[in-house]
Image 1 (cartoon, helix red, strand yellow):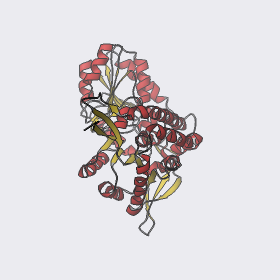
Image 2 (cartoon, one colour):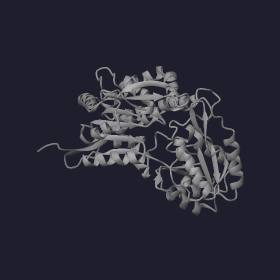
Image 3 (cartoon, rainbow, N blue to C red):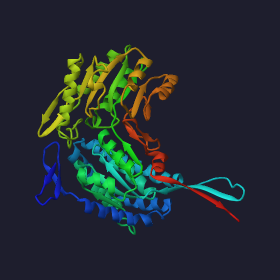
Image 4 (spheres, rainbow, N blue to C red):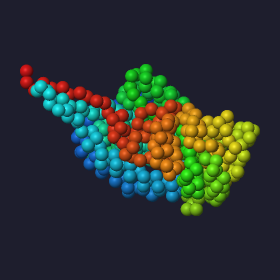
Length: 468
């Protein structure tokens, strides 16, 4: 929520989506304030870039002890601010450390100069040098993980960071500044900003930043891309998804249902790589659908702080309107809703029921437009070719999944599926050793893995003749 205090200074309020209580109020930085913070991190960059990668890793490892000391506090803040069940928030904290450990242990080797063979008295090598100040936009749905993917990789690569966290989860941005903005001898290396859209648009067009990492909507990513293109600086975009899965006739439909329901319902479906459409082979379709229905009707909705809650409230109440519009469109065009299909108010929170649809087609919005909710439409298909064609029939291309025992079919699917990640017998998971890449409207560039470091550095060619 945005408030005008009357003196042109704007405030953001964060609210608990379950009980409606105001958690905190934050004063927005104006353009001068943002530029002052950018100036600070630019100054710190000059010293930080000269620190060898191994020493950077040691300093950043020490900074991470702040998060370790505040695990429970941070998990509860995530739940309080965006409604994720507390046990899922605790899982996010644990995964945060797994991601961080991978980045820390691989940075030095990945960023080491690549020395070419000596040739005619020439010394030749390729260095991976930092870009400067990186501006990172972190989304609210995984406030720790999305932020650490960019922040820690950028710092390890020798950059300084300006972090703009989502309005709903601003305290998480503050934690990053407390951890990484107070490194001894490099104070101010990371600054967290709180700013409105107009100010951010000016920052992207005019301020002294050198790279942008953005996670958010397709529309937001396109605006960022247009701004950075005018300045000839690069950006990394992680945008939307409409991730599809094919369940083949040879697989166990019960086990596949267990995996895919979790992949569609986790975090109330508020995951970029959550499963949003399933294509089940006609031979196992009935068993698969019935198992999904049984699993989804058992979900418990309620206070996300309670241990027995499976699905929390939507972070934005108006998100349910888009979901209900998709349900209305699907019903009108012949779909059947086997369970769920509508919003539910519990306390002050707006929930959307775990929803299973059948008799769906690609002329329905629910099969084409991202809903970011706990909705799983299942379409009956005759086999592999039909399923692949339908999975690729999308403006998005983040992940896809195949459930099969057939090794050859899985390998063929990895070739045919036009997505950045291809899963077999699993879904909705990021492995930090693998690049996280979107195609089509799902984004550009790669996060995580060694390619995440490469995207946050540029190549410098060193070409020395040893003697005249």
